[in-house]
Image (cartoon, rainbow, N blue to C red):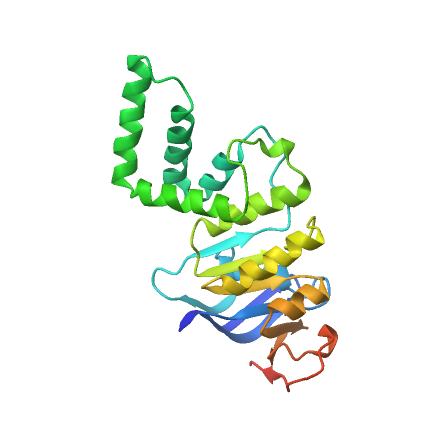
Length: 252
């Protein structure tokens, strides 16, 4: 099932052409690795898919209701914010209510003002399907072995990377975008991430310089070169150190 299509997409940065009449499709179950030189347009293509930018011409078609979430290259700030607050924040308004509810439950409920506030938050959560979303947050935190009440500033880079991924996963996206996801991760964490991607129900689009990770996760390669996008099926690209190779399909 197609989730997102680019049709005759054109994108340029000044006189530098990033996409030239590109026709691309993302379907459920796809595992797409983006390749290209620095400045070729990999991050710009992710931005188009995420909806943060629009093509200069052409169309980006999304299936009705499709959700896109993104793990950006930058780590979450090492702040006093708790892991629970950061992860729930991926759910926007409902996430703020969940964070309030979570913190209220850690306080003594022996005064009328606190009980009244708790009741107001509970009522607001019921209006936005908050109990299902609460279970969603707790399930993701458990899967990623994250302690909810730990401050981000106390976590290593690898664990903050997990927290960032949890924030993306809690949105239950149809398309998950990963920009250099193995940065700050040790070998065990990378193995864990490979398993998460394999089990993910939607489509994954990723940028990585880790060739071993790319081999184990991508089922096709999109190579961006001077505005053209070559699609290699089966991850059969000579730069990915695989024993087999497919002829590229040029999408014009």
